[in-house]
Image: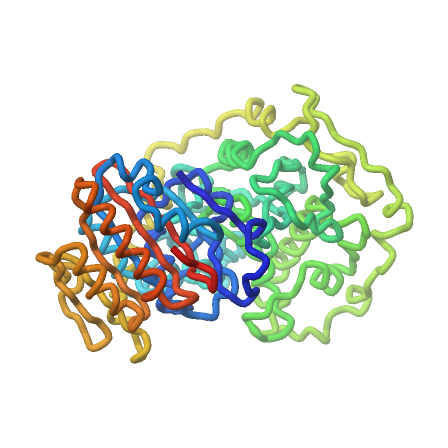
Length: 564
């Protein structure tokens, strides 16, 4: 039952500065799990002290926002069409609102989720490693040993710190069901993706290239976007509306191809590769990021772009075509940089480890400005590439005249390639294998904290008006007010309890409706009066209707014209 009226339905006389909430398109037909729903209210209460909700967007959000949540137990008949029984929903939620299905759970779990905040992945991983060690250890370099690709792998701590997607407690799927530990024979694959942006500014995958350590192009395909594109970012991505027309390859097709192709000990290398993995909605335990291997500033938090690194260390000029970047060109440049690092040692190219960048050969430092760009590139007519098996369009000719992808790219789409690839050999007996999800499970033992204990100012207060509130907040502090409504009539809850909500940053109120029609009528009247007189402007209001079999949430930020 999801709904999102979106920006197109915004009334003209609403101030642009008023906060508003919108449902992201990827969640329109998806039921929210309980912790996802709770994340919104924790974020409104704590701001940056809590993870941002991924399923909705807040416009003109100033850091914190007052919110009121009603959990209303009702009959199945009312829940199937609440607006039929409750007039205030029709009027209050007429525009700029969200209606969405939420996971049905017992009330104990619902309230527990609201008052238990999730810690960031970075914090959880760091705590886990400090307590029990790295869940995915790999060989470390020691003086005198031969340098291997696995010596450049990002540690789990570094992956968490730089925002790599993880395999547990998230939407990202592992590249393999099980992995085996890396060794001297583990192959390296270079990955690069091109992205466009949707109407919320979120990067959307539209092209992916994958090559092996010999430079052979294994995958090079356009990808049908999962969201409507607002900005094709053509000058960088090389993608246009015309180039994506007729493309049927989906994100799921690409994920299946990667899973089929990669062996269980594969190492994936790229430049700022976590962005590529996020676009793919995949995660991988063995990653090398060349943007972290080369450090020309001494600041670990500042990563130099691929174009500059290639110019400085290889003397080549990439990403110079006005027609946009080519992900194959970026893959091959990344491979050259990695091989350079592998042959020169850990400290090479990293001033933080003692490398003197002024000693670079001047002939290498030259920037070949015209090596990859010409007027011919800009005027080149791009043609579609059709799969030799199914005859479907899967790519376009490259805008760069001398790019290797013009001759060496695959002749088939990833759907057909997946069928052609031979299954990866099964590891021999005794080979240790692990599941990435299970390896990270322990991290989530340290994944939560009390919302009440995270309230650090007198302005950030919470009111919990539910039955037996001490079950969910056993140790309330001065920033929390508990009201046990077990013996309260519905009208008393709305009149006396809800009227206090405006004094708190976050208020949770539990109401149980009887099946009697007059109970609904009275509730409707009381709620209309409460919204008009008891709710301050710019407050997020949520009405969560729940029955035995389903739960539906109505959400809206009260604006200057909201009346019931």
